[in-house]
Amino acid sequence: MPNVAADQVLDTLGLRCPLPVLKARKALSALAPGRVLKVLANDPAAAEDFAALCQVTGHRLVAQTQDGNVHHFLIESAGPPAEPGG
Image (cartoon, rainbow, N blue to C red; front, side, top):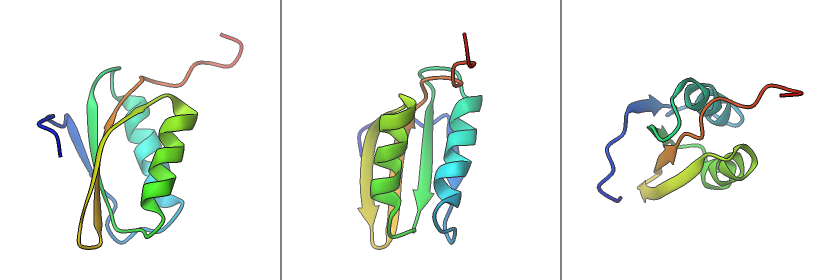
């Protein structure tokens, strides 16, 4: 994992899809742009789910590693979602 400090850590161990992504999305929307969220997840679909989350929302997947069955994600926040019509 690159030498990037996380501003917040979110432990979603034991949660299954879609909860890890939903919790991460909420946490990322509360972070200022450029801040980094570290997510721990052991959902087998986590790698695909977090890649899709970043692609759809504009957040940046900085790094992704796996230690046994635990995935570690560093995600840079793009800030809160844009308001509809704004």
